[in-house]
Length: 364
Image (cartoon, rainbow, N blue to C red; front, top):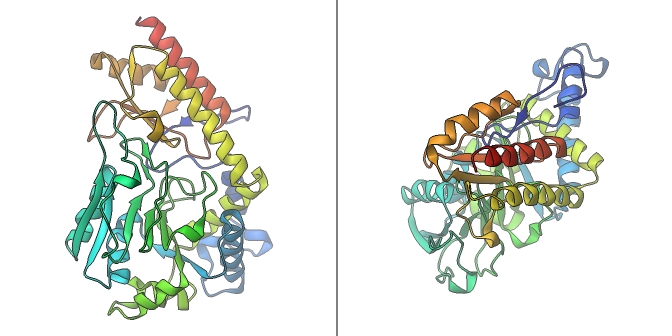
């Protein structure tokens, strides 16, 4: 897989994603001695000047990458997206009802969390036949009486991505855990974006929240413990308590790597081309089945099944022999899935495509 001495597997896992090799090497070189300081970031006080510089640089680089406007705050919070399923409601629900697009597995998880806290209205659900697709926003129910409209930008399990962002009279809250930093977006069209780190940002344990400052006023009116409050977290610079410092540091290195790669436009083009090659291989053989309409096919997560399900174990065994891991589908739907996060190299994708062709030809 790699021309370096210690070859790495091609990690197509949809859980903790592959990290860019240059970032891992940078972390390795600084692990015992961070830039001559004589200690590791793992040992560094979050109140220290060194870590303050790390945090400030991460904030600055993320703002540059995503063109985040000045009237938005960037928060680095503990936990993952599932924590935000509840926190976005507790911080932003001022009308006693929220609206959700039911686009798949994770959208329904978010809706279940919200339902325990307030009234949840469903603006639309995916159409299942003949292929799964998200209805055009012109067909969605009115959400103007809700505190916000919640969207899941990319469904990792279902392999569904939103192809359009609706014009909304209420703030749009969006879970971008599996698609953030994969393409440029217009941040100003969202009221709040949250993203668990463990896909395209860095190690699990930290979540990025990008929130329009006017929404922090809603948060400030809620009776919440400070560590759960967006307003309090923003006021404290994400350091109300000890943050996951190493994950924050690692995220900052990923931001720098993305800038060195040329930014999100360059990354988006590479992601699109990689996904096209994988989908072309799947569509080119009757052995493989993908049930998502082309208009809503995810570039990050490509689920597929074998026409003969009995061949799934053989497929996975052959993949493991070629150094591919993470191709087993989610337990809720089975089958297979290739996740193409930013760290996946063109070489790894080409090798996967070659294997897809080889396996199909062997069983034609």
